[in-house]
Image (cartoon, helix red, strand yellow):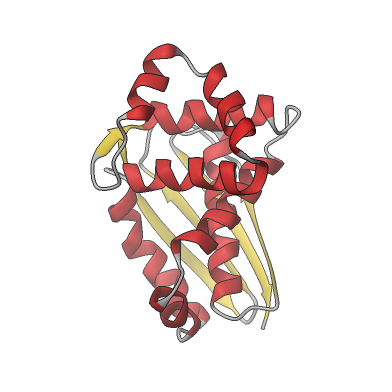
Amino acid sequence: MKIKGVAIRGTTRAIESLHGKAALERVRSTLPARIRDQLDQVTPLEWYPVEISASIHLAVREVLGGGTWTVNHDLGRHAARQDFTGIYKAMIRAVQYDTVWDRLERAWKQYASSGEAKWFDRGPGTSKGYISGVGGYNAGMWSSIAGRCEGLLILSGARGASVSMVDPGNTQCHFEAMWLE
């Protein structure tokens, strides 16, 4: 299983933006040397082992999160805001909420080498979904994905949003989303 470098870089940029350069260095210093070496070579368009992202998220939990995944969720939300700036922010603002879910399903293949994202039970201010068919994911990665979904809802005009992970596992996770229109 591989993920695109843009997702890894988005996470490290969010760490630095929210917590500072020193915090990013503390996270990096706890990573195994081989992961640090790979991290130094990451470019946005290349594919990398999922282990890099999983290791970063574990380090974030320990170094910045006090043993919880809350910071990982916040990083995902912030990364969405960083990823969708300028013209992309205007485009995301113009779409309806159902379209956001459809686009997330299609976008999954741009960030992960396998698996699928599906959103269902869509209603006013609510949706459920899952990502399955992946390998090597941890709760920090799923929490970050939930945060990214929250960020996209806010960018598309929601006044408030909450996306939570349900039953996170190594190969799949379910999500529940709620938002105020």
